Length: 467
Picture 1: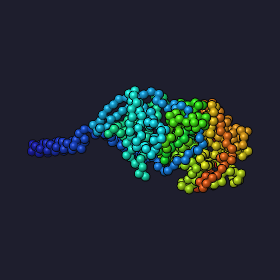
Picture 2: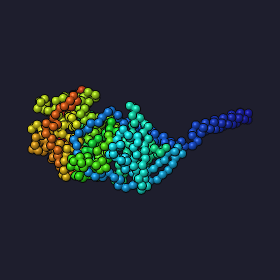
Picture 3: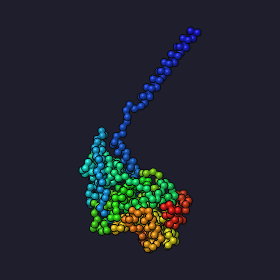
Picture 4: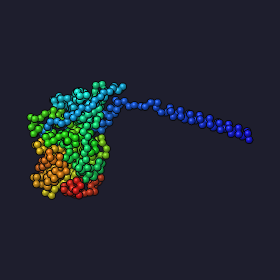
């Protein structure tokens, strides 16, 4: 009995020692696999990563021709409202960080300040109360081997940024919170990614009455594809803020349409072939491209749909396979009324039909400088418009009624635009014409609601919740 007790004691001790050794080995092994100190990401890596990501998202399909109608710009209100509280720091990787307010490109509008000389541009910033000039690193190239301009495509006049500088060049910027927060809920709202015809129409109405016409608006800084705002879901706060800063005296280029009054220093026109004010509003093709993006996409930053205005209708048919294209626009010539959701490209313009009224007039939504302000200046932007022979036509009465009731601020500045059929039903060249959505095969947009068969009045009542 005593012998058995001794044996049991020895076995117990052996097991305890073995367990202790195993535990020590396990703990030691775990400690060796964990980092002994926290890993930090260098600021230069962050800047490079951000720039590369933006460039990869930037559409680079060639484009230049937006609307050709000329108009004006009044004194710029995009000057800084206040300078950013600036502070400087230096990282061990040699990246200097500043805070400043962007004031624009030096010598904007001068003959030498054009896209071809972008490598020599100097960019003005208000830093700690004084203006400073910086050059930007343009070494990052797009898929075509041309500068991607990731920093320029973030810069906006009057906005404050955190600026990353290395070797005397800006390598990246990060937008800081704006002192004037903008809160805007569209009167009509679409749903991102819902590929239905009625959603396309509702989405097209989202920027109505709060987005001004800017030539090149919706295009990127270098004027080759979609801007960040045109590849973003929802109505951009930049558009709303710019609209709120203006009044009935806003003009996008020449005051009173007089070229002798043209002044690049107070103009929102893209002098020099690059879009200094790409972010502030939308032109016709920027508007249609943004509408398509918000109908088909569910996340920000994907390739955009902005392109030549004159080619958009045919492109939606031939390149994307979303529907049919006809070079005949006029209902009187084809015997086919324009349907709700049709996209029409004419020389210098692209617009979206909301249908044909019983009297033959057509209701549309588009971005144009053809909306004349109460002060006689063009530049009204995205709004309902009419194609007809007089203001007594049904389309005009519908447009005027809805703009006055639902967009009083816009209506206090602008008159609803009436366009003659001979101007907007004119087909010129191989690409101008009418695009209609395929609603049956699943390639375009579905139409369970039957929106293509609705009248313009029925479309508006449904979209504005009057059904």
